[in-house]
Image (cartoon, rainbow, N blue to C red; front, side):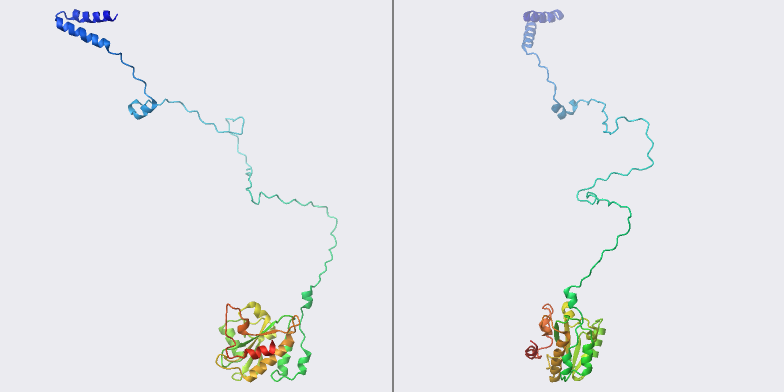
Length: 317
């Protein structure tokens, strides 16, 4: 069959143009045979989506498919086309309590209300005083103090000391100070503490002993804090001020020594005050110098470097 095709291909040009020479006919025959020997063209494979993406000219138009609307879930089985009228009374929204919230805790049970059967009689209440309250009260004045000879505590001074309403077990300490000034008296110190230091109760000490400048040498003056039996303002501690009596000797004992009469009056006053305030746990009030009892955060040198501390502790320790 191949030969017939070749022959037909050779005769066709011969019929179309009979004027061809033998060489041209022979050359046309050879060209036709060569064309018949070439393999048939392989069909080009269809392009893949990746190749179409790389070649914009081969990208196909997307197929338009009508999207189906997504239906929202509903709790109603049938939905009516006609809307229902709104409820005039709004319903309260349900509140889901969070963990550890006040709403998550169970509510207390509602007490049952019983029918009124008359008011029961009130229960009998017994109030008993504790032992501490029984021990509280006022300390009586020492009877023996009036039969002792006092050189610096006059009868009027002792009377004022005795008339104060001293509470039992109140005063535990007696603290000795110096004024830091070479002169002064109770009235001058009261004005300074009240007007300059702005202390509401005035004079910070309970007693003042003069040195002979603004008051008598060894003279004992009684301050308002003793008459009213209120806390002092002489120690840098509210707790100690409430349980410690303050005695101030006029003078600057970093430069001078206290007078002999001042020390004698101080000894008599401490002895009488110990009897007046009474014992606590079978012990008299403890006597200290200011610098020995002031809190360490507020150090002080009061009552001064020339004050006789050995003399004070030798008589009252």
